[in-house]
Length: 80
Image (cartoon, rainbow, N blue to C red; front, side):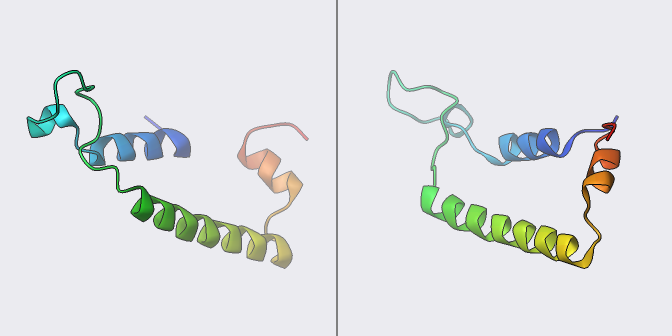
């Protein structure tokens, strides 16, 4: 079974987040599926770093001629 990249990332992030229900805590009335610690600063830094790396790779591939509209359309299964 093949997953798209977005599906694989969504599954990864769902699996790595610990919820209040799993930790056995939380105040009355809170959602049991809420994460224990959001760590938004850390997530912001990692998102920025990963986005910069992906952008740099894509920019290099485009500049070197490896990434073209025709190849992208072919990879995505779209007629061009």
